[in-house]
Length: 114
Length: 112
Image (tube, rainbow over the protein chains, first blue to last red):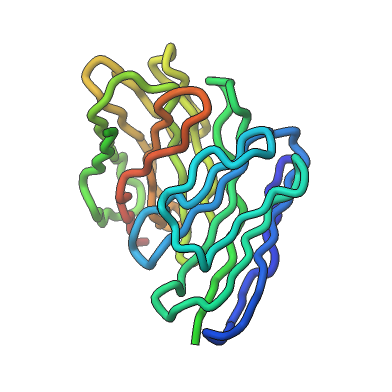
C-alpha cells in the first residue's frame, strides 16, 4: 500500500458545526502532516506529528485541533470555523529520517464553510 | 528561513516542445528536494525526489537536476503533451524531521 487516504473528499459545514477530517496510511511512515491550500497558492504547513507526538504547530487557530491516535491515523477536528477557512486540506506522510524517501500526499478534502 | 522560488509562474507551449521549469532555494543545507504535479482541485503527485547527495533523477520524459551549492533545481520535460498541463511544485526539506517548504509553482499549459 503506497497511498495516503483522506476522507471525506468534500465537506460543507456551517460555522457552528463540529466535524473531523481523517487521514490514513499503511506505509510505516512515522511522520504525518496537515497542510492547508488556498486556491492558486502553495500548500501551507499546519501541523507535524513525529512518532505520534505533535512536533510542529505553525500558530494555527485553536478552532483546528489535530489528533494522532496511532502511527497510521491522523485526524483534524474542526469547530467554529470561519468562511476564510474554506480550502483544500492535504494530509501527507513520510519517513522521519531518510533522504531517499519523500512525502506522499493524499488527494485532499475540499472544505467549504458556509 | 528557507525560501523557495519558482520561475516562470506560468508557461504556455505547443505540444511537442521540450521545456524547463526552474526552482531556486535560499539555504543550500537541504535534506532532499521533491517535484510534484497538481491538477486543479486535486492532491499532489510526487514526480521526482532528489537526495542532497545526488545531481539528477530521471523518470520517463522527466529529468530533474540539483545544484545544491548554487541553490537551484530544474525540471526538464521532453516532448510535452496536453496531458502534462498542470501546476508543478518544487519543495525542499531542510533536515531530517522538518517539513517541506514549497515554491508557488509553475502552471503549465500545453496546447494540441
